[in-house]
Length: 165
Image 1 (cartoon, rainbow, N blue to C red):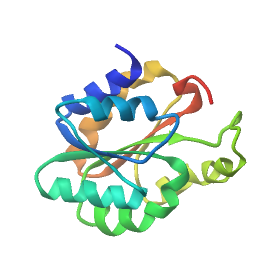
Image 2: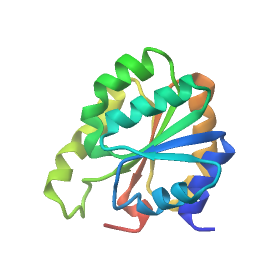
Image 3: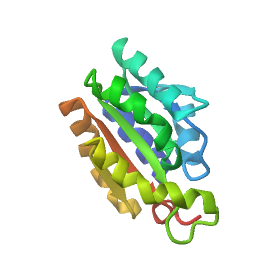
Image 4: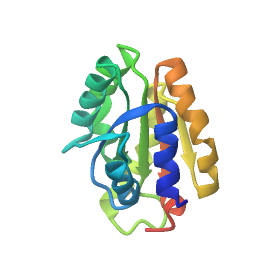
């Protein structure tokens, strides 16, 4: 089983039946696996805040949901996270590619990397940073946690987790 299948399997095992995604090179394998999985309704989004709205609707409709996105768009989700997801105590696992660290080939990705963890901390959103694929062993616990406490949780996966840029 590869890492993409493992992550998708963990989502399904946690009862997640709705996943929205925003395109990302690092997350492409997981997105493809999610799209193929018969137990997941996959609805691609144009923007991360739109995706969070879709996840909120799925949650209100009785389905556990998750979003797969890049950290560089975290800034556009702040209002949605605070006034929708957090205000209504909706659990939302966020699988986030953490772009902009040393070795990043795209300069504009770097600036948001500087702010990602601080923004999550300011919003009191727990963040788990996976650097190595072995750390995916923690994913089921993180998913259980987000549904137990009805909070959004960030799972940051950096380039070293995915094998480089």
